[in-house]
Length: 290
Image 1 (cartoon, rainbow, N blue to C red):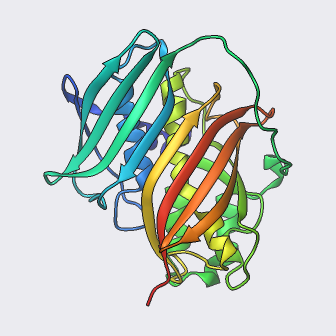
Image 2: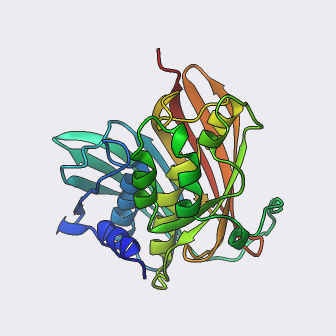
Image 3: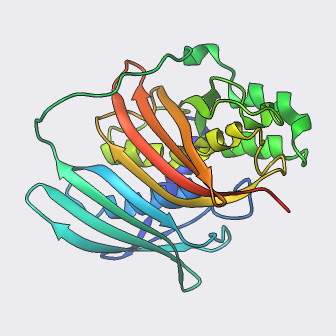
């Protein structure tokens, strides 16, 4: 297992300080705030640790309230909203310096048989044919305002093998494109057979690239290029079918709208054999610097 993945798993292994209170740490991010995918994944870990093991996460809805301080611990308080015959609901608030920075509601369900249908998987290149982050990012070094961004991005993504099917936003600055983006991802090493762990890893990765398609529509490269400022506002995920985060997953993303200083991204995540595993929707602040 890659050392970076071991470090990430350690980051998600929260300390229980009371029955429904947990404490998490942060690590240095590419930007001087806590990475949104980290706090979302940690909050889901906290919720999952208060739920019976036979109930799988099927949805989460979250709001990013304040920028997190990577130098301070995060306390996660869990409210046991409901324990029903089939569904369990939890609410989690992440707190730093006495203030809430993040709020998550998550629902868990016991397995049951039901009707089956799904949207088909779109065409996508073989992930093994695409360059890794370490191979791809140096090609675009000249696009970034800070020469150190390439190294920081590679380090931030070392736990996950994430490969773009097409040029990323910073690879086509100034040229608007169709607001669609595809990436393949999997963890850089095998994971334990714990369904909650795989769901939490997918939640972590889901915040990395979802708003790319908003940038593509306007020919913008993003915060690292300096032509956009922004942050995640809210995030929702629905987990439809079992999957493994240590096997290739296709993240097919698009942006149906941007207005009022906000951009919306929506996506479907498929297993390599074509099963629809997850649906994701996120809105973020996307502003042009003045």
